[in-house]
Image 1 (cartoon, one colour):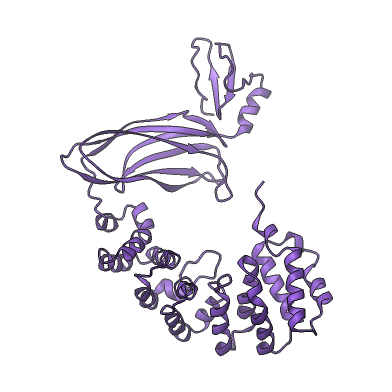
Image 2 (tube, rainbow, N blue to C red):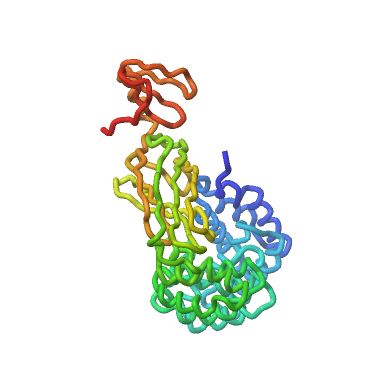
Length: 412
């Protein structure tokens, strides 16, 4: 089983190494007290960010009260650490340094090369954006790629795991000034942040983002890469301006036929194949963005759609068969629930064909067995039998007396 992040980072080994490193440069450090504070009764049950904040709080309790002195100690030892563990350093600045801008902002710039200061800079933006944004604009012009990335990532309005920036959700104009500096950045690490920032903004101001993208597109390969990634949400939503920007025209003469699923009734954890045919009637070459949407049944019975891309390509007139696999296996980011799941084939932002897949829990098949039905493993010999149920390959099917062929589990 894959280890959870909270078990990989802020480990006992890290706590020991951190304490020893501080002791080297600050002999008065009370390691016993630090360890006692860290390993509080609920330490093992804390999640990743809780552990980070907890370690930071313990540092604040055991380092010198004077912020300048404490920060100097952490600045000296920080280069020994990296990754998630190093987040305690910018977190300390966030926790204790909001009244010490002249010390804190350069410290965040230093620490961002070890992990990232994208979370810790946000309280400074919330407290005084007019003071913080010019500093980020300076970082956008730096040679160090980590500093340039912080300039963009730090001011994303909807940064995951982080505090939202409501003033930039309302008016993103200050962000655009920074992104203009970075629009041709040679590092993909930085360009990805610029694109994600624009994608965040597009959820509140789609037309403003499209104004920027239409002005940027077609002048530099790095900028084009940013624009395409920045418009991903708008493209999935079928925004016509975004589609036209990349050459996806009205799909009125494109037809989708023969949508089918194998199987059409399936249990959670299993996979299916779906197939369809796309037909283009107009002569000449047409740019096509092909996607499918799944309306997931949620725990409360309502549905929520997610769009998946199949391909983008230039098609000539003709007929093209398409087959794809889809898994209903639960993931850390998605849990499946029984019910009718609508699949929609989308061409250039327009739904062209729909089909229903019945999703069952494994318990429903097991319940049939309790009621006197027989469960046959996948691949077993199937013969017509009264009241015979099949549970195999993720399907839950019934074999009737009159027909040897299985048919879908009856609803209800």
